[in-house]
Image (spheres, helix red, strand yellow):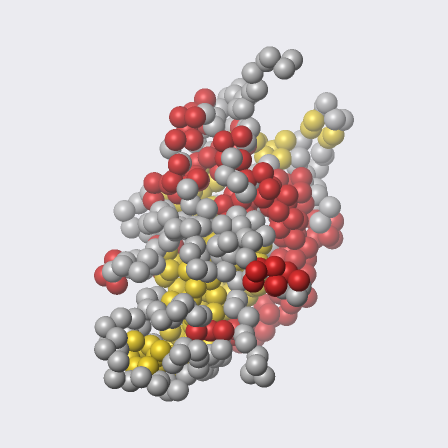
Amino acid sequence: MADQPVVRRRVIKNGISEERTNSSKVQSQYQPYKDAAWGFINHWYPALFSNELPEDHVEGIQICGIPIVLRRVDGKVYALKDQCVHRGVRLSEKPMCFNKETISCWYHGFTFDLDSGVLSTIVANPDDKLVGTTGITTYPVQELAGMIFVFVREDDFPDADVPPLSDDLPFRFPENSERFPHPLWPSAPSVLDEGAVALGMHRTGFGNWRIACENGFDNAHILVHKDNTIVHAMEWVLPLGILPAADDCITTVEDDKGPKGLMQWLFTDKWAPVLENKKLGLKVEGIKGRFYRTSVVLPGVLMVENWPEEHVVQYEWYVPITDDTHEYWEVLVRVCPTQAERDKFQYRFDRVFKPLALHGFNDCDLYAREAMQNFYSDGTGWDDEQLVATDVSPITWRKLASRWNRGIAKPGRGVAGALKNTSLRFKDTADGMRPGYKVPKISDDV
């Protein structure tokens, strides 16, 4: 047995062409994706919910290994690189703002213009020749539906090339209803719709963003959710899984303008539910559940239509923080033209959707992703995985993302999580502080 070669990838014959198997040739088509451990840069990402940044408040986050500081002044949100040009201190650790136009480094007083990022003065050295000659990167911001989005870019990415936010958001309906008909449910709302309300949460996941993203539209992982409370409370009966039945079970969208991504033709004859496994003596009868459909677009945004109920859509973002952490955004969107409808949606979100769907159902996804992290953490998992027919979805996504991303984030330097064995990391661990998304503030007592 020891002399027999190890089978790394198996070709599963079930009516799917060999083009769908994960051969070395196929892998070469998504090498950029394999290189994107720190995420895709030059894209729009959610940064905070609006209520997390009240007036004159400062908050620090990290996306794609880039430290970002946000400040709200007179209702407007500004975003700048959260790293002083002097000696790299994070401005958000101890916010210091002397007026409405600037933010200052609390250590040595380097002061930056909120709008341009230019070093406008130094508190105790206002005539230094460095003033006006340097600065920190600024990031375009757009706020809507109760969410703050930031275009996370490379330092030299020009303003003129910043795409509209809609290019990095899921497909919109009903404008795409003819292209992607869905007779089983109403048109999915969008955060761009008038009257849209986005309710949700975000939390740090301990694993690479790509593992999280692929979990979101993985049709083989229904098994993970079979014991969820919402499944049994609604008396749903789920299939064992869903298998592709045709090569065109997925449509890729690569239009000149608009989002780039893929749509899965679920609940059509292009996908077949698995109802029995004779080998294990398993059989499912009387399937009952919620009709839904999943799609994903760059930089890594999942849309689940008709979930967890009609007229509601779930968005998920898997925002890279480092190469082994991501911020998991779970957002439900509904159009609520009146305050009464907003109140009703909030009530149902607080008492049903958040505990049963965003926590109960999606908690299983979190620990499932963490279960894969060790296999992929050193980069060899992408070569050693043995994929099957159902994995047509992640393979298609990897190839498309490799073709259309606007840039691969460089490994973080001089930022939290760039090195795993620093004294600060050990200190935080000893103090019971997990790696996270937001910057902990230095106490005013210090």
